[in-house]
Image (cartoon, rainbow, N blue to C red; front, side, top):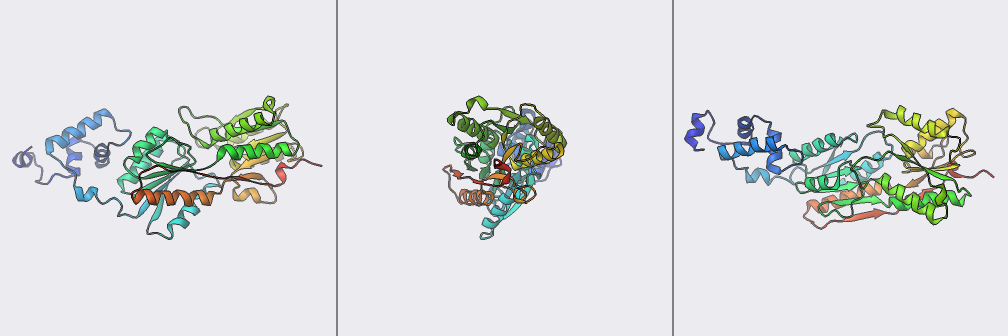
Length: 352
């Protein structure tokens, strides 16, 4: 479209992204997503925006597009706010950033894919220099698409095949194996696992890795016939804590309940302790228990929860270092694993 024709249609001489948005009848954010080839843009919206861009002769400003890296902010996306382990990771991120010019901005995805994608889009639209995703529910392919637009590092997401982004994790398989081995060393053979219901189409979760470690250890120790996994709902999307507590109480009431249990997370191991107290089940007298994360509450004397420590602060620090080197221009992928270890407390001990 010529300058004269644009003026005839009431448009100013300078075509901006707002001009395109108005012409296409969409938001400025929608135009930005189309230009960036962002995930989740419908074909209809893409056609509208591209048609307006072509008609108006719009060309994105190179100086504006070149501003990335100058905001000195990174986005941190949490799965939720309920897990007492997550603040350890955030503390590690902030400690590592304290020696740099960067600051962290936090968003909470609530384990919902649609919310996670919209928050990442928002972080990109605000020109954050990089993003750390903590236990994202997004598939590897979706994260890779976002990583083509902004440097990304994930924590609590196993994707060793990923080339577009970095991962930092505890060795979750080994952590589960350590828990099973410790319970077996106490003399237990009937060892079950409390785990989460799987999410369709999602691979790479820490839960999946811990299940693999549990099965491997039980088989290696000759306890394969005792392998039993008990699924509980996710708090964020399946009825909240009340539903989880009810499911755990149902497990505790089972007449053939395992004598010892490895729980995928302290988050639910604490609910096991609460349910056991309500139902009059002695821990460890009638039920031995090991959690995962070594969250601060696990050390409370009234709980005494044995737990696998995966060094949350270290995970946050390593992820931040990886992200800063990505921002600085590193392109090859890095996949780091931290060695977990057991913190022995009273909940796992076999009574004399």
